[in-house]
View 1 (cartoon, rainbow, N blue to C red):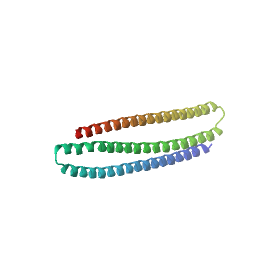
View 2 (cartoon, one colour):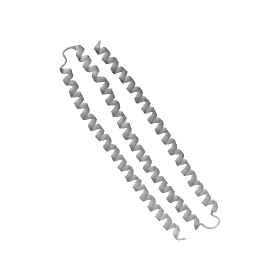
View 3 (spheres, helix red, strand yellow):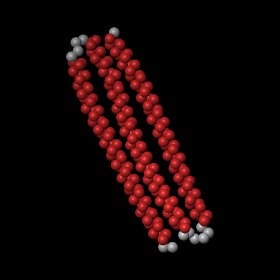
Length: 191
């Protein structure tokens, strides 16, 4: 009978250790994502400054209004494409970080679930006679919680896939519109 408090104490300790491991993993993944985002922003700012400088030099060298509009129009499409590429990279970083979070959480949940089931099995071996109904109810509750978590995970993955699909469709439409606008600006400048 003295084994119950020790079993629960060991289970609680293991659970706290698992939670700390999950917290550490998520913190590490968060910092990795932030680091990637900072690197992307630094590189984007450097490239934008170089592009702005080059464009300013080109605009200062123009001889008339027609040439000014031609140079200006020639910069519209590349600038839009660079903005689009930046958005895709940010979305990719966010998606990768989210996937790492999901993987870590699923792994942690599976481990905790395994330990809880093991503890319940161990405790129920020594359960007093007549407690079968309570043991069965506890196992059913754990099974229902697992099924609910699995459904939640499945629904979340479907929602993320739908968001990514919609984002890709929007990016594709924006790219097409940018190309058409760039072509129209070039033909207007040439006229």
